[in-house]
Length: 241
Image (cartoon, rainbow, N blue to C red):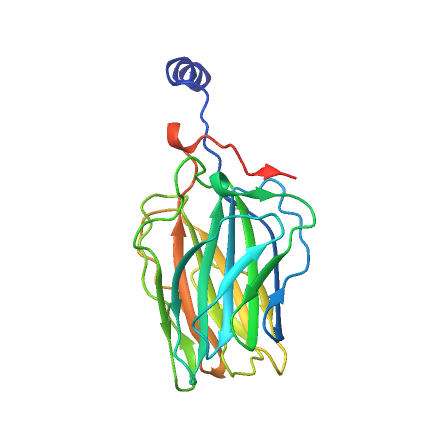
């Protein structure tokens, strides 16, 4: 009976075009100097690329990549001369390319960090960013936790991405709650600590995540991206070089 019902639905509405969002490849790096370029990763199959620019006491940043994507910036969060800065950028299917040997570059003052993650199954025919979901927070004094701000997904299956900068901290541990998966943590004694994490939500409940760390002066941001689905969400993917 269920099979008959499914076939009837397919005949009436066509084969479903949506696919669940999945995390693909990721990388992170930091260094002293005018910019930092990531190690190469294979982004084949990605419909969304997310880069976070991490820096110490520098709000201005730029992002570029080896496949000439168009990068859309969200808000920079931090405070000059007191704590780290973090800013999320993203590129989606209608604006770029993916493939093997893919590198990413951030320029953000003298101390730079970069975290990168790629995803499949996000909206491609329209901008996947959920309007007004960009939030962030920072602390110019030493703390052990930071919340970037509460966000509310518009639908089940939305992707939440959060990025964190440790500022001048020397992190020995870093965790998140609420089931987030951390992609990377880059740490050494000279550059800003940098990390990124994600969660594909099962419902539309508000999400108020917490980063927990050894004492430092961090900044954190968060944003929501929409899944593919329906006529507006037919997956085209990015062009593969």
